[in-house]
Image 1 (spheres, rainbow, N blue to C red):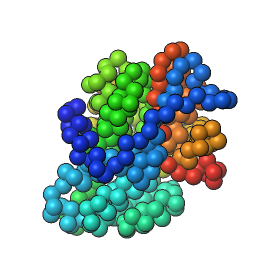
Image 2 (cartoon, rainbow, N blue to C red):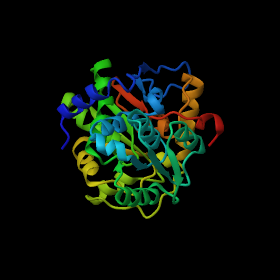
Image 3 (tube, one colour):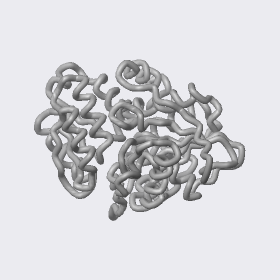
Image 4 (tube, rainbow, N blue to C red):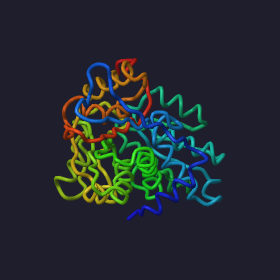
Length: 315
């Protein structure tokens, strides 16, 4: 199990390479998503590369030996983790290969190439792209960056919660999007160590209830299919390390539709001036769609975890 001390160590190591992102109050003049209490937004959409993923990937890079870095790094991603890994490769001055599913955003593929990564599309969903990345990593002896099940990555993602609790120690509810479970694992471990009374609420797409299915089964299970169009939240299955942490730390998981996320992304743009991808709007979508209803008077923090132009393009 990853410890709080490991998360604090990760925070110190990555500090020169990532941003301390704002925590802002989101009291809207109209259509308030939580009128009965205080809603805070953690703006990881303003993080290096556009998402919290830079924290975990940078910490993973810094955990490698010089020889491992020299040989090159590889991953598979729905987009955001790939960008973070490309950034890590840029920091380490090494070759980076990122496998993307065919559903991934072309905008993010172009950004990946801008960071110097080699981009390869493979398969319909992340799991298919990931199988190829793992095979190539084994053949070519490349360091593989898992997007959610690597302890170094989880510790890096946990630094988000350290920042939130430094900025506002009295947060009662943390609302967190789930793809494979790396972010909610890091946040869960950190919050429960520092503020045990706080509740952690996970948010998954109705078309990819990955952790929900495994929680119901009591073990890791693979979904029969993925129907969400949100590639960054579309893992066919989680991993035991993530399921174990979620079982211990997460109060509940709610499901939102792609349309719920799209509407929330539009709200973030028109009300807050924030351009997010659909995964970045998932936590807010849970509040706006009424899938998570916090008790009155609580302080709620929703993570805006990924940048993008989905609210502007209509995707």
